[in-house]
Amino acid sequence: MDKEDLGEADSRIFLYTKDYGKVIARATSARKITSKLASHLEPFDRITVRFASKMDNISEGRGLQITDALLIESKKGHNGGNEENFRNALKTMYFISRAVPNGVVDNDLWNFLRRIRIEGVKSSIRETLEFLGFGASFASCELCSKSGPEYFYPKNNMFVCGCCLPTSPELKEEFFKLA
Image 1 (cartoon, rainbow, N blue to C red):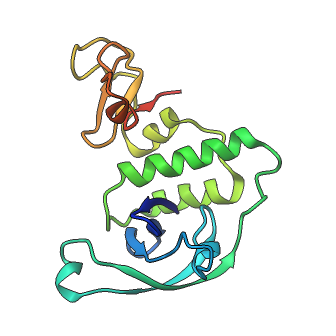
Image 2 (image 1 turned 135 degrees about the vertical axis):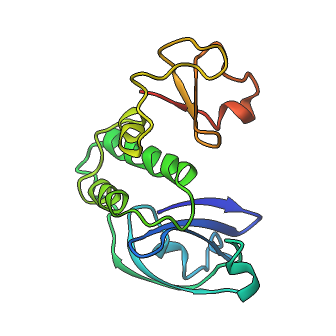
């Protein structure tokens, strides 16, 4: 699971389910200090969630609202003291939340995410791309054809070299360094 800020107090939550694939939902007031949802919506936690939605928005892939969440198992503090593995796991989850389409059920991805959650991750974005079928071994920069690209842009599924990387900080933030 991953999350991002949405407005003043809300959060957009990226959930990974075995039966429905990636699901994106809104958690209203989840960032308020009095929120009962906040402690249940942390990365790597295993939770049960109930949603509400308007029927006309479901087909468009939006409009899901988290009404409540029940924590089944927390992974807080279970990184074995290895901060680098924990940071890699968070980076991998963030990357997957941007690269994987909504509603695509993939049992191999589900097992990969479970392994990250249970064991932590020692892999990199490069290895995650290999798993997703975007191996960088034979890739070249999409813009100048230079071999050995250094970055990946998940919105367009393209590799770019350091020379072709956008200079704008907002755009640069959306590219993942292959490490």
